[in-house]
Image (cartoon, rainbow, N blue to C red):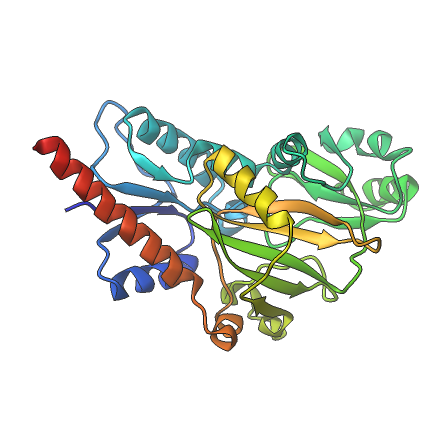
Length: 310
């Protein structure tokens, strides 16, 4: 019998998905990426592999999980295994620069951005950039490391007088700051490439907009989120086409609407964390939707295997 293998590095974030898979009787196994050995000469086990790595893995003392995932996903794909969110999905979720470039190429509006290798070039890159602006680590999550600067001089003082910004991969984005028209951003959840619902996240408490209960144990963060189940916006068609073209099956895409009413897209993640309180209020379960999708994929894999054997 085929099974689901879940690649991840946060057991807290895995538990709701594991419970949903158990509830539906979907056979599954965790591949916890925090070290270990992979025999690259061996054949991977039969089954379906779901990659839900997080860009904030290094903040949980798993600094090599993303690179480990890169190697494993290449190995799986080389052997023709069915991978939900393969190498391309991983790269878009782990690199804001790669994501912005891909979104721009797809005709999806993004904030003006510059990628800078090393903090030494940040001030020079900020000169002449629209003010105020954000400095973001290329790979991060939960809003970690994002800072707002009034101008290049303030950034220079920050670097000279305190400590420079940090980035786990040494790359930063200088990005145009676009105040949202309303005090929230919208995060559209996709399962199987189809929109599940839209989550509104209140921006008035800072840049940490991670909806997972584990992200918001301090200061009642759950109340920052609300769900719109029948969300409809022209940008959805662009997102679906983008995800399909990049082989991304389960993801969240975040955008804001600026004061002129124009949507700007700025983030994508594949670690599929949902807010239990907001989902209970809306009567929807993202983890159940994922478990159902993976269950159907396992069933289809079994049918294909039996047909091949016949």
